[in-house]
Length: 361
Image (cartoon, rainbow, N blue to C red; front, side, top):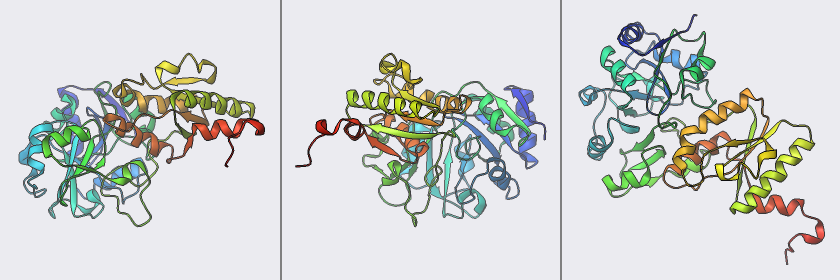
């Protein structure tokens, strides 16, 4: 299959809409990441998303709409969803709502709920208007890899797998949408994103964060939202997160890099802008300022993709305080690392001469 990349414009929207109506796939930009879309009502088209991505079929998809009227016949709207829709749609918020039988099981992984959002990106909105269909769309990357924030990222993963990529430039937010479940009592954040816990609390009053946001799902836990069950967002190399006091973390990163380099492994560190100079000998990759977690959110997936370009096999990373949008960053970094974490003090203690190690007594 020849994959065409077209700059966003009316001719491109018309072509993309035709492909969607014919049961084919189209990649398009949203304000979060690029999505890989199919007609959400076409039970023959949606499985093509899973085939193109290599995505497990028990991982539900998000349905994108351009108008609230499209919800008619797709779902029942819980009362708690209405103030969220008023406050954050269009925008990077996905809401779980009880589905109707009109939604194919392959969209929801046979769950009783459907995840729906209304993107704010002008290219996504225009495409959805022209095709006038609800469009099921996960991120437009091979399953498990970092999500794409440019058309070039999509082409890297999807060349020859899909017919069309709409190029709308670089995505603004850089992380996938926040997902919230409002179907079961207290609203619960299943996947954090650019709409933060505090922003949701201002509208709803009470909001909880699912424990699985910062840990793997248990063996018998159900993935109610995309991005919950599997190792996601990961480069080919192995990421290990280093937690602890700032000065200790920087020293531990330097030590771990040196050990990996001595072993002949292609290694690097992911660090904040403020530590780039201190770690300049450790092949550092800039995550943005420690004081601006939004910078880290915006550039994270681009940095993770660059690690494969450089064939990095051992990667050590600083962590972001897990509040505000930092919670979303740590959700993605944690899953990219399969939640593999070392404490800086333990790293430093293990490397110290025996007479200098702290006593257990």
